[in-house]
Amino acid sequence: DTGVSQDPRHKITKRGQNVTFRCDPISEHNRLYWYRQTLGQGPEFLTYFQNEAQLEKSRLLSDRFSAERPKGSFSTLEIQRTEQGDSAMYLCASSLGPAAASDEQFFGPGTRLTVL
Amino acid sequence: GEDVEQSLFLSVREGDSSVINCTYTDSSSTYLYWYKQEPGAGLQLLTYIFSNMDMKQDQRLTVLLNKKDKHLSLRIADTQTGDSAIYFCAETTYNTDKLIFGTGTRLQVFP
Image 1 (tube, one colour):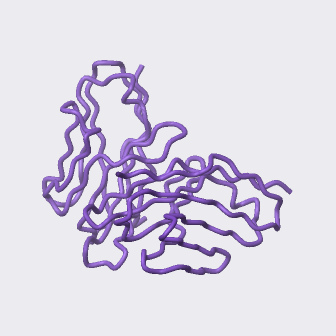
Image 2 (spheres, chains in turn green, brown):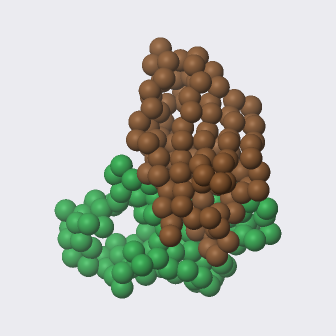
């Protein structure tokens, strides 16, 4: 499978715990995006990387959230001291970057986080 | 500002055409997209249109863009039960590469 993969697919945690999600983009893609989708809403942008550089962060990304892409390949999204309001589907997407005409973003299946 | 809106539900009979509408506020849109989301599946890009185009056709899908009114529509011809899903419109703009999504339209196709 050469698509975007995410791990884990589901995560249940207790409030106050830390969680970390992983995203593996399509291999030749330079850009990697994180989005969050809550029930009944469209995905909301969190942050994105061009190779290993984090180029933009949303105001939604509080200081409890941190994302990394250390070698420009896979990325991790960590949430510290989780709150019930963090319960959502966390989506990762990747794209070729400015070289592509439309810079289509390909989405992974998502990680569903439930905070009890 | 960034705001993309869609109607929440659409119900059509199998074989009829479906038209899903979207309005946006940012006049600096570059590309506009339609994504499909099925239960348990990831977002699938259906089609996109560059902001200087008026129309794009791709098999059963027709995208119309009225840039003056900031209105985007997706027409699905000969709608099938397999088309039942949530459809999101999204845009990118000149000053950012992030996707700005609408709230989604749930399409239900009945026999």
